[in-house]
Length: 168
Image (tube, rainbow, N blue to C red; front, side, top):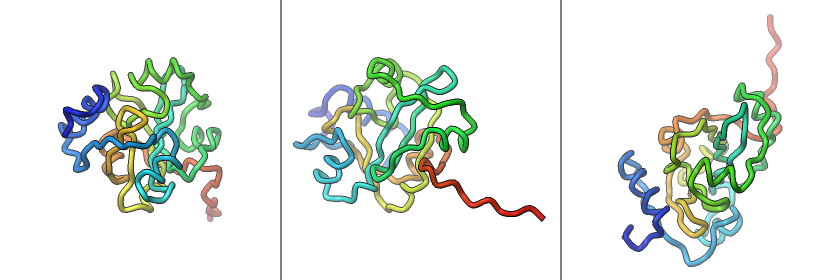
């Protein structure tokens, strides 16, 4: 029941419901502040956790939804995304951009939509989990639903660049 959720998570749940998302927000007894904690609490692979990371690029906050099994290569991602340098946001910048704290940033429910990239590797999992506004709330979703909810670009966030095909 959403009335027992923290206020920020109720807001995320309302945004998800309005958008027609299938998964429902749930509160866990254990922290989901890290991907490893979330995976342990949910009994899933760490790669099925969608981390919400805020960076500053071209003077604005951007959201990167990455697999918990990946570390973002900011230089490679900025190049693929066609953006300037990606710098990790400070806790204050995260809160200003999302209204949420680090470790509790949901993909939705921010004061305004953020330019977003979704890690292509999340599509390897039929169900993924994303944080829902606090370090103890989550919701199930899919990579495609995340893309739709956030109007995101789907990109490889790691340093492995696709092989270049020779031109004829």
